View (cartoon, rainbow, N blue to C red):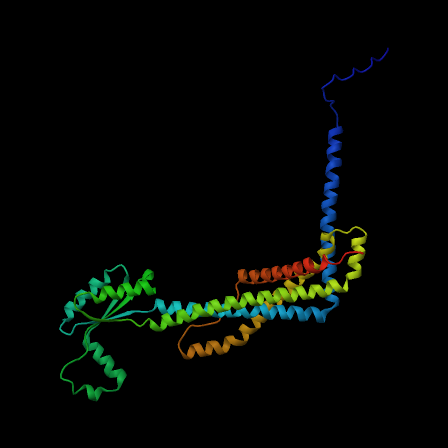
Length: 338
C-alpha cells in the first residue's frame, strides 16, 4: 500500500501547529531574564552600598547624626506649636461672654432675657447670676465683708454668662455675638476678653512661619551635606568609575551605587531624627507636665504619630537621594576616560 504524499498548503493559509507557542515562550524568556537580572543587580548594589557604609561606621554615624539633628529640630518645633495651638483652641472653646444687665432690671425680666438669648443659634447655654448671689460671692472671695456691710444697696447688677455654640467659637463669631448682645434691650455692658488669645494666635502663626522657613533652610543643608559626602565617595572611587566606563558601563550603571548610598544615608538620618525626638520628649515631659499642673492646664507635649514617623523617614530618604543625585549629576559626568 503506497502512502500518498501530503498536500502542500495553499498560499495565504497558516499552518496549524505548536510552533507559535514555542516562539512565544522563547520571546518571553529573555524579557523575564532581563527583569531578573535588573532587580538582582539593584539588590546587589544596595547591599554593597550598605556594606561600604558599615565598613566606615564613624564617618557614617557622623553624617547620620548631622542629618538627624537637622531634621529633628524643625519637627520638634512643629510638634511644640501643634501642642500650643491645641491648648489655645481649648481656651477659645471655653470662652464665655459676660453680659451685665441694667440696674433697674428685675430678676423676672432678667430670667426672660436669659431665655431670649438662649434661643439664639450662636449660643449654646446661658447662666443667670442674680445680684444677691454675685454680692455674696464677691464678699467671700474679696475679704471685704466688713466694708460691704456699710453699703446701703447692692451695687452689682444681674449678670448673664453666655456660652457660644460650637460654630461660633471663633474670633469672627464671637465679635458678631458681642455686637448683637450689645444691641439687646436691657443689656448695659458686654465683656469678653479675647485680646490675649488673639495675640497668642498671632505669635503662634508667626512662629509657625519661622519654623517652616527654618525647616526649608535645614533641608537645603541636609542636601548639601549628603552631596558633599557623595562627592568625596566619587573622588575615592575615581579609578573604579573609569574602569567601568572603559568596559562599556552606562551612566545609570555607574551612578546607581551612589544613589543607593544617598538613600541609606537618608534612612539612617531619619531614624536618628526619630530617636532624638523621642529622647527629647521623654526628657521634657515630666517638667512640662509639672509646670502645666501648677497653672491648672492640660498642656502636654505630643509626639509623632505613625503617619508622622513615616513622613519623617520618607522625607529623610528623599533628601538623601536628592543630595546624591545632585552630586552625581555634577561630578560623575566630569569623569571620562581619556
